[in-house]
Image 1: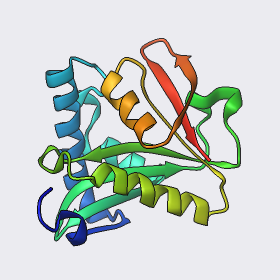
Image 2 (image 1 turned 120 degrees about the vertical axis):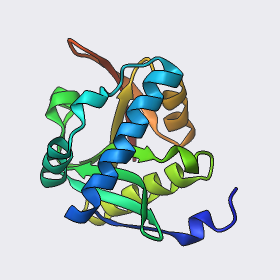
Image 3 (image 1 turned 90 degrees about the vertical axis):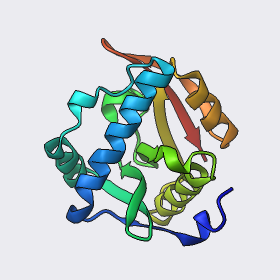
Image 4 (image 1 turned 90 degrees about the horizontal axis):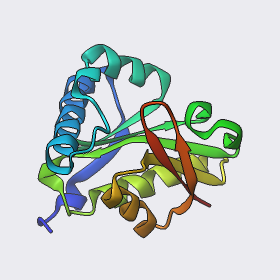
Length: 168
């Protein structure tokens, strides 16, 4: 582990000034997922400053910063009927866009972001933390199970399939 990475890390609500860095981070992740894993999870062409701004407006977007550098993100939504369908409920907070810069890989940042998201969701009176990921991303599915999330099933959409996870 890099000395002091987690001790220098702060997590806060994103501000509009963070959005260009968020875009860079999401593009890095989309490129890596495709190039290294061969998974079409996120299309880089779908990430523009406009799409990041729209996500910022529609969700509660958080950034992890090391000094001034945005090196991680996640967002929280209070419903997700598109993915969760009839399982969508008011007792859950839904985590999306959990991304950590490749330069911080293996440092425990993703785990810390998940923990902070869970604390925030619970502070809003919710008793379940939910997330989804691409069903064919084996490594990511293993990661979420290792982080204590329970696999609830799979949802198939016209252009992708997602695994559903929950932690109480």
